[in-house]
Image (cartoon, rainbow, N blue to C red):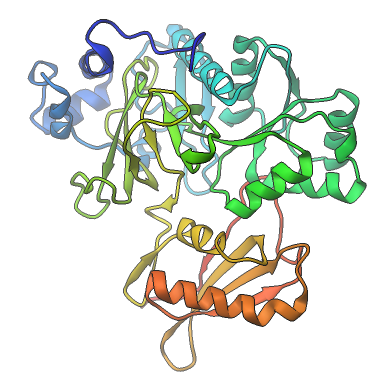
Length: 433
């Protein structure tokens, strides 16, 4: 299916390319990074001791704490004269996580992003309205450089200002919209409020940065009149957005094709740190295969997902993982059950009459027990008279699937907060002494 940005593998195939990249990354990091040399040596590992892909389990993990502790240039594995850019994570606690890029890293990132546009069905005749943040954050630069590498027309609007966004969509006849899922919902509701759908030319919507529900995706697609909506993945530590994309095939169920020729993906049990049972949800761990400025070796992303076996009906041969279901450090333990936002997304998407937004609030009750309240919006066309039956259906589904009982409040459409960035949906108000 991919042509211009298809993986360039040799006669040994993808596995041989991955092994070559793993050997290069370990050697490069050992030779050019004091941090990695010390970490690998402490683990009793040298570049010469890595001979196969299975040897990756001998390598030590790295995580966000290593990036913060190494501030301002953590994991740097290239001389400053070879660095051309930095980007920073959007983290809200402690020091920013700053990553370095060489020109090769920038070029590789643009190629990966070009592959995303190609898989989404974008053409060089498209006009791509980029509604994400610019600056230290990777999103704006990634979407724009990938668009320019692909050859489509970039319209770098940035986030916010819904009136301007809608005006540009109409005036410039933008055909591709790139934004966070929360921003996409705001745009969809603005277009609907102003009755602009018939004046739009939107074909594709590419969403990044956060988990999105099925109801939210449907709302965005229908209000903007798009043919398809695609989830894009990525994190600042691994270039930025553009490291994978959902192909949009109806039978693919939102699974993400990830670029296994640029990084290795492991799924581990976040508690035991051992490989997760195939098909089970676990934490994504990534190892870069070509990154020069700040290579990653077994970096714990904290994102939860599972590998999807078999070939995709879309025809793309690159492997897949499920949509991001939550984060291992955001998991809430409620009455002995580990729960995360993606589970509620999946359950609520099966209930008729439920809108796109929800909140889960956990607190200590007056009776000394933990209590959970799920606040959901009714769908835009639903009647308040159906609220009781909707709440009962949600309670029943939660009890059947997650094995606990909760309270459900059904609210009018539009009652819950919207955001142009990431929307918080899990609130654990309990205190533990």
